[in-house]
Image 1 (cartoon, rainbow, N blue to C red):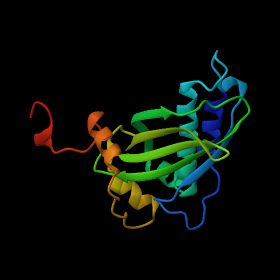
Image 2: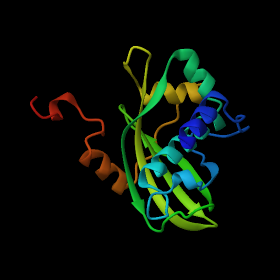
Image 3: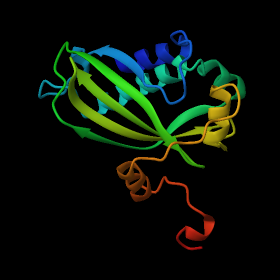
Image 4: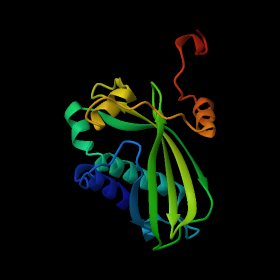
Length: 184
C-alpha cells in the first residue's frame, strides 16, 4: 500500500520540472526499500519493482513538466507490456536508484528502459511499452504526446535497440500495418 501512496504523491504532487530536461534524457528516482516491499524470503517482491517503476515514470513526466499538460488534455499513461530481468535482489533499507529513459516510439507505443542500481551496482532492468489514452479511452499517438511534452514539434524517434524491437514484436505491441495483422 505504501508504494500506491508514493505513486499518488508523485503523480498528484509532482516534483518540479528540470530546466532543459529533454524527452530523451535520463530521469533518476531515488527510493528506499521498506519492510512492506519485502516478500516472505526477505527481499523485494517482484510486483514491488513494477510499482517502483510506476513512481519513476511519473517522475520522468514531472521532470519534463508534463503531468499538468497531460491532465489538461485528459490524457493519461498506461502500460501495454513490460518485462523484467533481475540480477541481484534488493534488500531491506537499501537506497535504490531507478534510471528511466525513453528508448524510442512508434505509432502505437513509447518504449522505456528502467534500470535499478544500488551504489552503482546493477540489480534489475525493465522494459516498458506504454500508451497514452484519452478520457474516452481512445489511443493518443505517441508523436502527439511527445509534441505536447516538448512544447513543439516532436523529435524523430531514435532507432530502437535490436533486442527491444524484437521484444516489441514478440509481445505484440509494435506498430504494424493493418495488412500485417493476423486475420487480415
